[in-house]
Length: 112
Length: 113
Image (tube, rainbow over all chains, first blue to last red; front, side, top):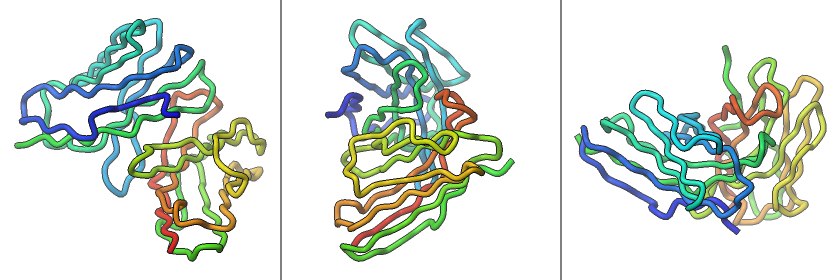
């Protein structure tokens, strides 16, 4: 049972434009969400997080939005750069217990 | 500082065999978690160890087991390998049991033939 879903396996965006990656979850107990970025042959690296007490968190070009009522979060990358091309995973956890539920990932390609 | 080290990087095994994967966490990190990554399922949580004790376990059969040593290094064992066990196995370490500061290794690519 996939509790965290990323329904778009892939996304292509022109350099300089906005990339929007989406993630839905089913467990209303999740209260901490993260995005990870993964290049081939490397482990995922932490990108940005948000707790359920907020609806937005921003870090440079990356912004995560959380809509608790819709059980939806999104990652916005503005402007998109070719180096952003990677697989992006969203993840959720309950409290700060050390178990993440990951989505299946979205492969982002930024076209120069 | 050194990152999370997983060995070996690649492994080919035959159905029915068993395999042991190793993970050395970042120095000082006491929590180690293991994940399985497959194309259709994303990252699936296997288990988490903290201070040599398993604290959390995912929905995997008993063929998957692990342990953690006093120096926080962890091993994962899979017995009676099946073709479906072919995957990238990732471990992640963190300072304590807080999900912040999770750092992943590069993984071990296991192929079962």
